[in-house]
Length: 427
Image (cartoon, rainbow, N blue to C red):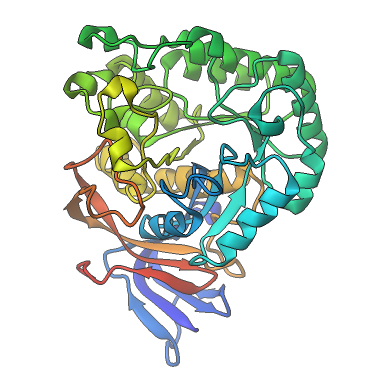
């Protein structure tokens, strides 16, 4: 299909373009940007809308194989499309674990049968995520992984982690670090530094910061590319800044809940606000925002972690960790970072699309001529109330329920094909 996206504010950080113009798409690629005849094209009127490269989410749990009652690849892809996400990386803590090329191939086949969203698996660091034996990373890379991670767990044996980093460096893929010293969390329910104010035992920031420091030291000595997942503390951001000053190849992400919510939100004991790492203090929230602004934290991801409603509808200390975010990440980020003038429009798009694509070395996050047309069209002037009963995900465990946000995704295109269209928008 030939498509012309007309009169939208095109924001493309890869070329520093921020201009009201037209994008012409043929055979899945951008063929022209500017003014020309649109006869023969399906015209999408994007007046007063943002036209941006599709979002790239580096940190998603799709729960398949093994936990498809929570989410599956098809439903996760639908949630992604609704949120303007055109590429996402799924974590390996499934059942069975993504620790061999056969599971990688399974995920890729299932993704091909979904709606078109690009799904790129991340392989486990150790077999069965048991922390004992390194997986065959080379075979998994050949099958299509973009990185390795033990997300959900931490490789506590530093020797094994070093071996994995050396292998990853040789294969030129990043290591995604779930930074959590397991020895410091045994038996606690992980609810934030001030959780004791509410009679709940919490986990201190040292559990996160110790592993950040260790993994950055290992990265420095192995020459590997290290990506720190879901940074939530001021100390973590300071450690990353120090490592970057030393020339360590380190990047970092955070999630919307860490720059919007602080641990006082737990006063209602809502298990939908229980995630790992936990909500931190107001000072940490301020530090995470600052780190996003100054480039210490490179990108925004969701850590989309679906659970069934009944799993979360229990006393908070018994509920599983995790919140969802694919459908709301852009709107929350826009509302709390751009409308507040903390980030510019192009800075936000860079952190949600262009930079994450570069971290895993894929040719995405760019809607220049000749590039694949993975595009989101978003009405940033339209507000809505987040309603957890309205999600297309199988799950509803958002910490942002009933919050008013700005930024309604009108269209999502992958490979030049419209995979999501919001018929209820003002468009």
